[in-house]
Amino acid sequence: MTPRPPITLFLSFSGQGGVERMLLNLAEGLCGLYRPVEILAVKTRSRFLESGKTSVPVRSLGVNHTLQSIPRLALYLRKVRPESLLAAKDRANQAAIMARALAKTPTRIVFRLGTTTSAAIAHKSRVHKAAWSFPMRFFYPRADAVVAVSRGVAEDLQQILGQPLPSIVVIPNPVITQRLYEQAEQPADHPWFRHAGPPVIVGMGRLTRQKDFPTLLRAFHKVHEALRCRLVLLGDGSHRSALETLAHRLGVAEDVSFAGFVPNPYPYLKRASVFVLSSIWEGSPNALTEAMALGTPVVATDCPSGPREMLQDGEVAPLVPMKDPEAMAKAILRVLENPPDPERLREAVADYTVDKSARRYLDVLLGRHSTHQG
Image 1 (cartoon, one colour):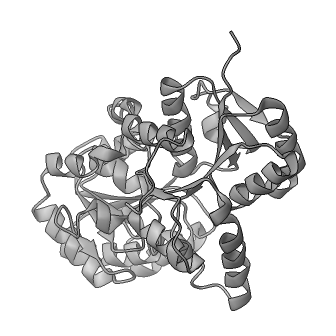
Image 2 (image 1 turned 60 degrees about the horizontal axis):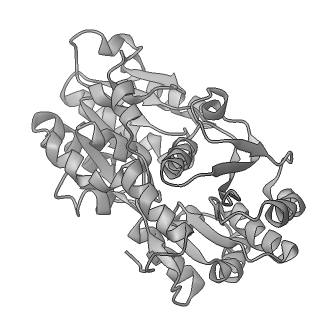
């Protein structure tokens, strides 16, 4: 019997972010529903790949830039003829369409859009914005389907394109796994979690402009004035030095821990008194999803996009304006005093399991879905 062609995930691994962990979750979820599944990677510099925590085969294209991969990707499409190909980032989306045209194959191409593009480029110059939006208007209508990770991302894409996109479908991220719950039971390797003590607030993500940790630090300073508490920031990035300086300037440095990249952040999330998402843009924030799945009290900015959908317009847990330390501090104090029902938090993210998400992705990849805006 001739083996059936694979479903291929066309990715670039270059860091340690939650998106990479989530895409590996998706690959494994798809593998449980359809075989074969394989990952075709531009870059393979990832702590998650190096840890050997995926059973899905990974092929490296041996190039350093996504657009450099087009000839090799075209050769792959012509030789392997996958059932479908999921491209997971903007440049990968563009490369997939160009490679299919070069290969002259009928491969089904599905894009995944994981961020609210207009918010992500809002601070850029007019030229930079045009360099993002014009290719999107050309390439996205040429995909067989586009998966948006939230309704906000889908609506934003429609506005950028300036026309309806019938092929768009909203699918929650495959964030919640059994492994998450198992890893959360491990000890948190930090002295502030080992013994009873002041409440510990946790923030998590790359230390970059997007996550807006300066606002969280300023909010923490206000909370700290009201009661003894501590803040742990999980993640690393280019803004670390500036954030450490700000913590010292605010006089809270002794109660702020920059823990860096933590391979297993879930014990921290599970044991946090409150998890705070301070971002100024997202697509669908995975760290917020994980914290809610563990029943941890949360506070989130009402950033585009995702938190409002997940927190049901603030009914499940507080939504606060972006870049507003005063409002964030008040919400944190309110949640510390009166935490939301853990079961309600878990129910709010029930659709973000790997099983549910992978089934919906598989329907899209095999062309047996009905497209909608979510």
